[in-house]
Length: 378
Image 1: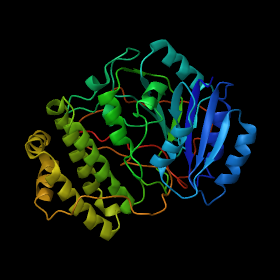
Image 2: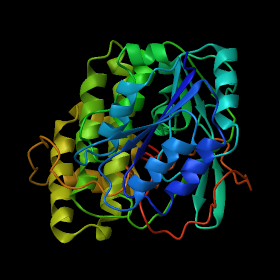
Image 3: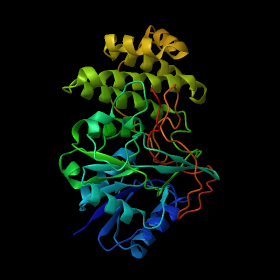
């Protein structure tokens, strides 16, 4: 029986994939499988993966004939997963030796639906520990209780799929698949659904995932139209949360987070191509008008300051129609999200560490990015 299935998408990451693959080898066990999904890479990544399946116990290579993006690549791996537990890794991040064995042991001890873990961010030669914004550690909790309060950074603001491990029963219930075709922020509807519908989770301090930041060709660094998929992602969060029995309690958090992300993008609009910047403003105006207006008004009042003023002014703009689907563009890298936060809320227990693990940790900020959308505080 397979104890753990690890889903690892790759797209044009030949610079960083050797570190990733070396770290998988240092985590191999006879009851682990590593599902390496090549999302139609056009560099030397396919050759690296072909060699990896010969050298890494449990490695399986799955190829896409067309570039589909991180969300769909993860779903391809999930469809092939046979393990009792599932974990994720991106093709340019890496692990400490033996990390997955320790993660499985923690999951079996706590016996909950999923675990969330801390991680180490790597920006060039700098490293820092990012903590799960759940203060009660090693204790089984109710996931929906970790969504609130609206004005603080909470577990749904820490959406990294690779920062955790998930029991197969969540996969069988349809809670682990990602929205097909989203090219950024695909993890936002995912983490919200997980916290609304799973029954139990826990946060632990096991460090072992090393996440590269600031990679030049990641989606967090590129200001093209793919970044605008965050609108579709958060529209889905709002739509699904509005149907929840606790919608009156949860919608203020969803709306406030959506506003914070819009504000973040507008605040860094100079990094977008001019046409995309105009589209961002129009689509954001439409998004603000689609939100529940009473909830939005309350959120803006609570936010106050320059952000609230900006968003009120934006809401008065002529809106664009809601997005209907992704454009068929190659997805450069596996990155998604805003990659930085704004706002007054804080992530508990943030700090720095000189953690170590397999891999160089000295990115030259070139190649493909990795990960999921970063926390944006409400």
